[in-house]
Image 1 (cartoon, rainbow, N blue to C red):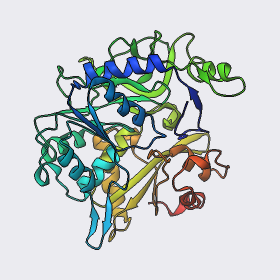
Image 2 (cartoon, one colour; image 1 turned 180 degrees about the horizontal axis):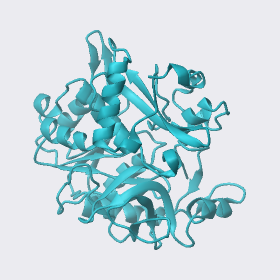
Image 3 (cartoon, one colour; image 1 turned 120 degrees about the horizontal axis):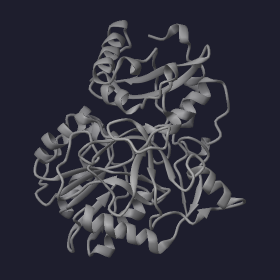
Length: 389
């Protein structure tokens, strides 16, 4: 039984089947990940996240699994020290290294180049999960980690203990894209007509059963709540809750969660492009974007946590808006930009846009126990629209 992260509501207790999950993992490791007997796998995770269970299944492929207990980045008198995981990877001769976009962004901000500072000659695959990877991060990885390896952004979830979209050892890595659909999975992107679309945003779906589908939700009315969550939108079609886009190459782009999709002017847009634009600013340490109701419509609110020594001036705000306009579209440009002290995250390290929006609206957040830093939400309660940049 696994619990969802609680980014868009109270965590759901999902009851899984053991055999189907193991079969799914073997396929993903052996065929998509090219995991071979004698390989060494690592992923910085905790036992509550599905990636821990995904990692442990590497044992079924004859691989060695390396677990790490401790902080991935240490604080020292000279600043941040991002070396622990890479020192571990070098000593253990890791072949498959798992990480997250947030961790990669921190490395880039600290000008930490693992490929220059460590012997990563055994490394064949770098994988990232938990959030969309921006196109610029693909560039950074191949420049500062290693050139001759697979970089795979993978996407699935606790609900399926696996991936709908992931990497491949025989397909090209395309900048900003998830390489292929999972083998044997009838994955598609559907529009509001329930028609499959390519080159347009829609809902990520799976139209046929698959081995790691959950058995039920734990507790009262578990079956009914399970079906209401994944099959209410489309009869007998799994609707996953991600806004995605299939490309003509068979690869895909994840634009964000359906629950946190922005709808200014009634047009649905994803948040990933806004985050990607903000990652290119040295002034920005972290950020959060969500929609806020205003006069029968919705406006885009961008909250930025700035690095030490920077302030949110009108000039910086104009630069941020210009970068978002150029990198995404005029519709993505935030109406409000606020400087904040912290961004709310779940215990699993995922941004919590929904909790910030709920707090701004003056409503109670139901999933506070799933947050790693719930106290920071108080700041969002008092964000003043008239004082935004």
